[in-house]
Image (tube, rainbow, N blue to C red; front, side, top):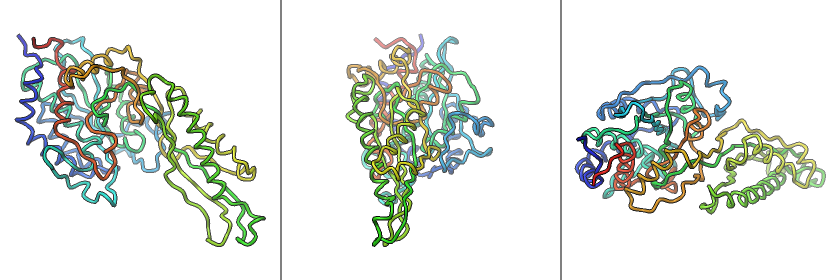
Length: 423
């Protein structure tokens, strides 16, 4: 009789292997895989996957990426022909008719920051690992690979065939995942590994980057009545965008897939440049931001909402001359997988079994990631799941506990293992 998954046995195995797991994660964190330097990790990834019995293949940038409707126009994207992502086979299900599950775990991380100068010098404190990527999302590669390694070590048959994408450029729009998907390999469902605190989500809100330039008329500050203040115009336009955010939030809080969040979508104005001289009325002001939105709206509709809101300022001279640009950054669509998809119940049940918590309704996540590409381009049911807290991602306090990785790894091992349980 084939072995079956036993949570207690798994946790004993993980405890015995914890020093190796911690060292592996630290080695991965130490690699500064900020776009376009994700390739620094390839020797590490090839070796780590091979140690778990997996085979990896390099997928160079797909020739159709440049013209695809879902390509990100982000200025930092560097999807040249020599760039690409890894894809790995992690095993084969015992049943030839079993579903194939694509896991996606991006390699890139955000840069170090002035308040986190040791981002790529990982450190351990107890069972906690600190460093850039510890939470988003290098931890989750370790979580998955150790689940597969355990099943292999114990001879527990797979009930799903796991494959793995390790894409580049997730943080700047997802062109790495899109390029990999365009190769057309068959899979039945997808799970994007992100810091969800081990909650299961079946969709996410979208995110559109915009850049708005207000144009005024520059004159000496002493002749202000004949000028048009572009900075004041920008402030007024941002005020109108805040009102748009409030209207969208009111609708979002009534959406049953997103109503568990206090702020299921957000407006963020992240960059402002304006004016030419401190003694002159400013002629130009440019601000850039992101706006979240739910699956009930399309990218085109959201772009129209943003431009309409900005042009609704009281000063018609500002309204008539402003320029809105939507080809400057993220164009992350929103999506929601049908709650009746079998993978939803399967992963939620595995999480409930391992954590001992009652399963809750699986809704949408309040941020965006590569998941929408697997849902909308590959057109398969797609979930989001992983260890790590979103509040720690991209922060100077980014960290993960090995205890949480162990719990997440047990959930994935249960999800991937044969349907029979120990009794």
